[in-house]
Image (tube, rainbow, N blue to C red):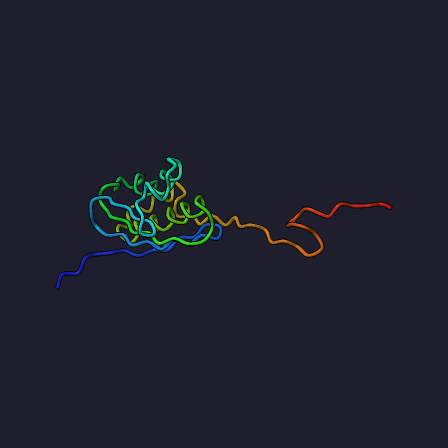
Length: 131
């Protein structure tokens, strides 16, 4: 029984989570069962997802299956980027220097600030009335 080599990794950004499965192949990318170009129609979001593969010069070497949930398109693209970078590290540890230099292995810690009680948002206050 021949087992195909697959690498699994998780990435997070804001409230989005992306779980990916990286297998040797021809460069096909599926996101939530849809094609890559269909799920991320804008070029900047596509470039965000492809950035780790382009940095490692492995764009057409691996098939990527991404399962993402939560947040919006930008957060999901950022989560997928981190997950792909982490999976590439499992493939070859020598890629670490280039990926780290591009900042692709760092999880972006910025999150939405929580709403506080007694005010309408995180920082905004209700209108002050002197009289």
